[in-house]
Image (tube, rainbow, N blue to C red; front, side, top):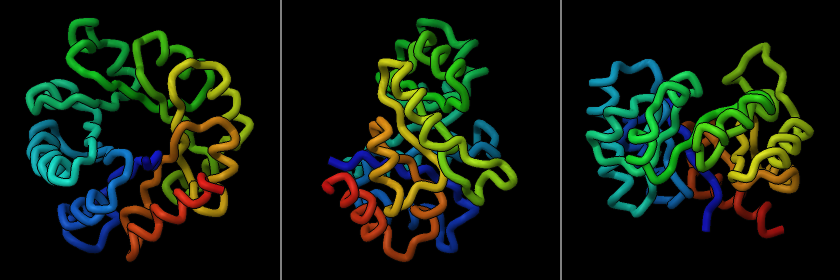
Length: 201
């Protein structure tokens, strides 16, 4: 089973966004994380409805981002929330979701996220990446510290490719998150296979 989550950024793809989502979903990653933070809640909900339908067609989980109430209206099971939003969520609202994640950039954030009820964390960014210009990667030592400090699965993000994926998994990551490559690759299936091959040795 794939341990790779494809994170979206519709500004990176040269084709129609929903066509790219269909291409990604047809390759069966572990999940699609719909991260389109510049949209209003109404715009996001409308897009999420279409993306969720495509993911369901291929049996791929879709994780919605930021807008918890929109996710509830769409009856989503999984949501990824920034820590400030997570801090303000009631226990009753959290119970509406089977999967809750957040992104962590320090050990302190990872500890807090676990206490707030997250079922997984994304730690990053691990390597230098064009998505985070002028911000050096936090490195594998940071990833090891996070993985060793919490009991929930930790996924890694940031500059991950076939050449370094084995190192990321060896550092304790339960999975890999890729954004730029899955949004721009002409061969998404080949990309995901290359990342998976590193797991098989």
